[in-house]
Image (cartoon, rainbow, N blue to C red; front, side, top):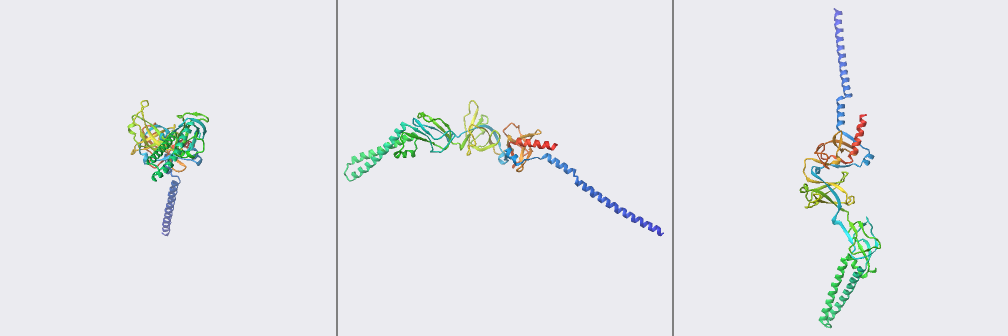
Length: 406
């Protein structure tokens, strides 16, 4: 009986030990399996790979950024606008150009300014030797001295008349002579002004020591000499154009507007002007719209006056301009230079930080042939989009994809 009890106790202890050992083993197995899952998170890895495929990021070095010369624009509210693209040409500001002519015939003695040089208003351009100018100056000096004489005579005759030494008729005659002298001086002065002499130059004539036949032509405006048509020793006529001077601080942009689009173009509409490479040059307002359509080209003319303080805009260059027709479009808009194709899909490159650029898939309205495209989706206000040399980023992206495939 005692042996039987001991056997039951031994069996019970054994069962307890087996149960405890089994529980410990199961717990450790679950813990190990859990850690294995954490160590090899297949779902997270796949997710990261999918995100890598969605976000196509390119990182550039400082040297690459400098060499690529990328230009970006930050999308703002003004990119929610309907625009129409027109060809145009930079031209001289017709209000800031002058043709300098010789007012009198003469011989060119000295030339102070050459082609391409800058002339300030009042600076001498050329000196002529002219007999006609000598005669005009002599007439003025003679009239000037005669007026001084008549003024002295009038003062003396007035005193004598008041003292009743002179008859009134003599005083009146002297006063008439003085008035006639004033008229003659003014006439001589106007003659010199008509010969392009300035008020300052005329005032110096009575005390001038240089020969009267020497005639200096000064620049009438601040500007650059864009034409010169004289040489030393040349005999020129009174109607010869000798210089053309243009102030390039402002220029005009002439737009060619098709007859169909002309009714949409109005004065004071906003315009963005782009170079052929696609970079934004400047923005301005339409200042003039011609009511006349050219019979041959069937186009009208719109003019934009644009500031040009650095003289970076060169008259004669062709440009493209986007005129804002509607300020409240539902779609963002971009210049077509920002668009690239990767694997058959339309993308633009977004600058995410100083060295990183992300390729973003977008959908556009219409075709890619226009100069300014409307974006249906893929971009938002605040995105900084590359609009110049984005093809270089496309090339870098191709390199990185090729390296990843290996």
